[in-house]
Amino acid sequence: ATTAAGDGAESAGDGPDGSQPSAGADDGNAAAHPQAEVEYDLFLDSDTQSSAGHTQWFYFAVRTHDFRGRAHFRIVNLRKRKSLYQQGMQPHCYSLRRNKGWEPFSCEDIAYIANSDLPAKFRRKNGDETIKPDLNTLAFSYNVTQLDDEIYFAAYPPYSYTMMSRFLGQLHGHAHARRHFHRSELCRSIGQLPVPALVISQDIAVTPDIVSNGFEGGPTSVATPSPSVGAEGFERGRPRGPRPAIAVIARQHPGEVVGSWSVQGFLKFILGPSAIARKLREAYVFHVVPMVNVDGVVHGNSRCTLAGVDPNRVWHDPNPIIHPVVYALKQYLRNVAQGSGAKGIELFLDMHGHSAKFGCFFYGSNPLASIANAVFPKLCEVATRDISFEQCHWRCSRSHRKTARYVVYKQIGVKYAYTMECSLFAPVGWSSRKMSPPASAAMSPVSMSPEGSDEDAPAERARDYSTAHFTPSNAHFTPERVEWIGFAVGC
Image (cartoon, rainbow, N blue to C red; front, side, top):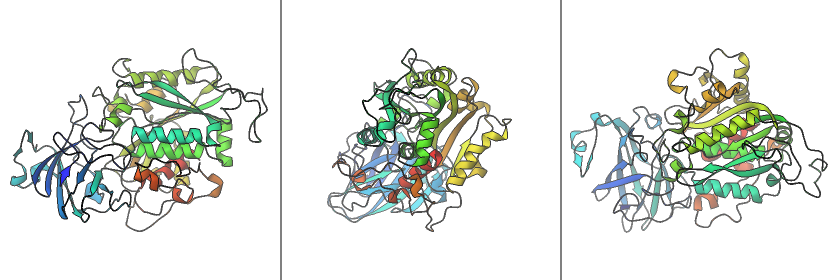
């Protein structure tokens, strides 16, 4: 077996999401050092330009050639001592030959232990790399059953920049969804990638609408009048007045892939045909930045930008050169909050993922805030059992006062500012039993036809974006189930 990651390793081609999971590929970051025919020590690349040693996210592949048997892997430089791998989580696997999509429980012999507790024979020097005793090892095995197979392993089913761009393109091509949003470029990243921003409002693409678009000196109307509007629309020439804004961002930390899946579910709901979604679009203007750290995602980082900076720790004073996306996003939100086309920002939500806790929960910004700050998280718990209100808290320690939620609350004056954390594994009280969150036809999301999906992306080709698939049946957090969480947050 050979790996598709690292210098000198054989490429295994495009991954299930259309990207190549290697040490310079969109979302990929593992470098392999073979120890035996079917045994590997894997060293994860640190985040680009970062000395902090953020190593949590992984995405790599092996090509089996004529091998059948048992392959053993040890990822030996994971930073966090506590992990959900100690609670039953496993690496996700995708076999091109088996073609069953990302499988969450196909590995065996899972162990997550401190390197200081490893047997002495594993704590030897390995080429130029050293297995450091202050780091941790994830060990697992996989039974290879197919010849000439390509098998992908990831901490969670990947969500790449390419997938986001494809999804936004699908929304733009959707007859219903495209009526209600305007897409623009927030800014360019250090790597010169466009960072998309969406403004969502009822019939914004076909009816003049007075909204603040967040760009300094920009127009107050982001829509182009249409000669005629359907039954859903308003009469031409009758723009709606200023309304409160709601801002939603995701994927500040690239390794927290569930953030992208949840914001995708949110967008499917808020752009969907339900009466609830329409009422929300009429009452509010939504500003959504679905992928903040685009460079980090493309380069396979766990936490940092291309400059080696954690973007969620520089919101207090972002530098326009070193932190261009956070700088532009903060200015955008300030303009929305103070612009003439909005009645301020009513709510701010930053979607993240958690690698050590179960469930989905919220962090607030002020432990002395009124009880009203707890209403939104509590309503979200009512909408889906996957959200645990008991795990929410409102304190913000000194180390977190440079984060998005605290700065938006303190400097921009948004009373309801939250971080949403979603487990990479399962809800609180997880077990192997099957369970499904409630669904309602009255809250149907945008339904995407699988026709026209990329033939080089089997994971995407196999997924039917229908209401039925939006109600997952597995007890752990599949991407579809995380989409449901975003859906529930929206409604």
